Image 1 (tube, rainbow, N blue to C red):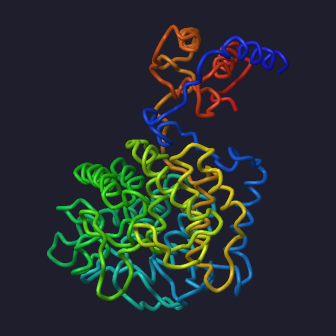
Image 2: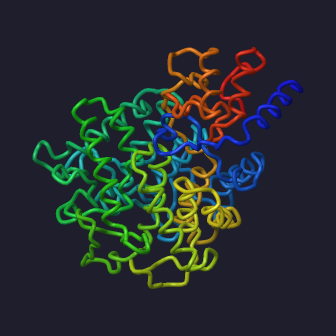
Length: 479
């Protein structure tokens, strides 16, 4: 080990004048690299502190005091639901978020309990909503409103696909892959028999607000999840549908550009398919930046982190929305605004704090650090209105800690194989050395050259590759 350190020091000295080449949008994101940022560690915390924070968060929401902390409630011996404590009901949004949190934190028992409750009480097997989930039930599983909410079905499908790849499939409703494929098929083809409405408009290639009459003629920007659609374009069992998901993902990215305000970066709750704000007759204020709209910043930034297919998220969106909330006060900003930036209330909601912090995934660390610090210093939501804030808090913590993973992704490169010839040998070492000395301007695989997976290519990476070739290090990347 002393020889390794000595080598690192010498090589770092030799190459100190060589500019560091940072990974950028051309590298492909988490799906390609398999390397996830822990932004909390990047901004000064330890791995142990982050783990303790996540464990404490889960314990409070899933095992804590039933009146003030818990959101997860058992129903019988093998079912459970996520309670909307502010509205005294159960929503498909919360159930699907809860399942996603469980699969990311390796909580299979709790995942299966939530899924069984949702499948037994929310799923509709016939009628105009066949294949979809009722968005609202009571604690006993009785349906309050049969209308599906598109975001719940989207998260159900994605959580199940991840469960299949992390834990494998069981039988019946626990054949996660089969259940997910059924949901994907319904989203695109539910109305093919002439009964019902599809969850994605075939002409617009966009998710609808609800697959129901007039509610299917507009959308909700926070329901656009291009990070998920790219995976469905790889994993949907139907080849034609895979092409459709690719088209939908690209459309959502363009939609984000149209629906975000040119100055503030804020999105409306509801929008027309062309991105213009949408008011509705049955509820006021949804042309403004309100509670649904909080999630858009996370959706954009997660898509960038996973796929890096559009630099706009990093070069334009993140700086714009961060600038707006810095001006409003990172620790004092409100939670509702007009799109032009007039404050509509003074609440400083943990859910919005969490979603703003996730912009770190499409931003440089220093610009995002105040938002990350604000989330870190925000207490786990508690009390009567802990549900929505709490769910977004958990998702934000998972994203920023690198714990929200693409289960089933296979990195598209071999770490250390700098010249992409499917072998790690002296040719890779020579090429990397030439690059660091400025004699070679490009590398066939920048990702493979980052042998310590820290997001940059420098002398440390060369030293690690040398030690690997000498047999001093057994695996790459070496951290």
